[in-house]
Image 1 (tube, rainbow, N blue to C red):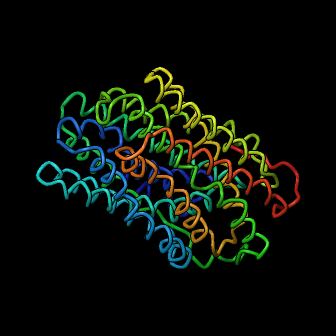
Image 2: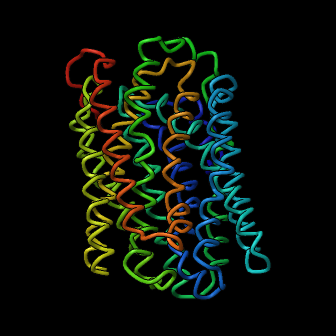
Length: 402
C-alpha cells in the first residue's frame, strides 16, 4: 500500500487526532507571513530600501489579509473549510514566488506580501475553524493558536539562517514554496465533513454573545499582533539607528518574540476561563510593561534590554491570542465561527501596522512619544475590557485540554 492509498483509506477516519493535517497549513502560512520580517534591515543594507519602504513592504501584507479575513470566514462557513484551506496554501505559494522576483523589481516584494496576506487571512478563518471542528472540547482554540504562532516563529528563523548563509532571500522563498505545494497536494486527499453537518450544532450567535464579542474581545484584539510586530520590528529600530541592525539581531528579534508567544500559550491555557476577563487583562498588562521597557531601550540603546523587550512582547502576544481566540470560538455559533474568527483577526492585524506608522512618525517626532501613545491606548483598552466584564457568561473554570 503506497502513501496515497494509506491517506485515502484514512478519509473515513477523520476525528480528534486529524486536526494536525490542517494545523500544518497554519504553520506553513505563518512561515510565509513572517519570512520577510527578519530580513527588513538586510533589505535596507543590501537592496537599498529605506526604512519607510521596508516597513511598507511589510505592511502591504494587510491589503491582502483584511479582505480575506472579512469575506473568507462567511464563505468558509457556507461552503466548507477545505476549499479555502487549499486557496490559502495556493496564495502563500504565489506570495513566495512573487517575492523571488523582488530581486528584479521592488514591486515583486509588494505583490508577494499581498499574496502572503491573502493566504494568511484565509488560513486564519478557514483553517482555524477546521482545526476547531476536528478537536474535542475547547482544545481547538489552543491548537490553532499554537500552530499559527509556531509558523510565525519558524518562518523568520529559516529565512534568516538561509540568507545569513547564502545572502539569497530568493532561496528562502523558494524553499517555502516547495514545502507549501507539497502540503497542498497532500491536503487534496483529505476529506472534510460536509458544511451542512458543521452548521447543525450551535447555529447562529446569540445577541448576548455578540455583545461579548464587541465589548470584551475586540478592545484587546489590536494588541495581539501589535505587540508581536512592535517586538520584532520596532524594538530593533529603537536599539540602533534606522536600518543598522544586524541580520542576527533582527532574526533573533522575530524568533524570540514569536517563540515566546508559542511558549506561554500552554501556560496561559491552564488559566483560560472564558467567563472572566483575567487572562485578557494579564495580556494587556504585559503589553504595557513591554512598551515601558521599549522606552528604556530607546533611551539607552541597549540591545540586551531589547532582548527582554522581545520576551515581554512575545509573552503578551501569546497570552492575548489564547485569551481572545478562546473567547471567539467559545461564543460563536457553529454557523458563524469562520465569520467571527475573521472579524477577530481583522482587528488583531490592525496592530501589524504599528511598525509602518512608527517609520512614518520617526522623521518628524521623537519615537518616545509614539511609544507613549501606544501605552495610553493600551491602558484605554484595559479599562474597556474591565468595564465590559458584565457581558461574560457565568460558568465554572474551563481548563483547555492539550
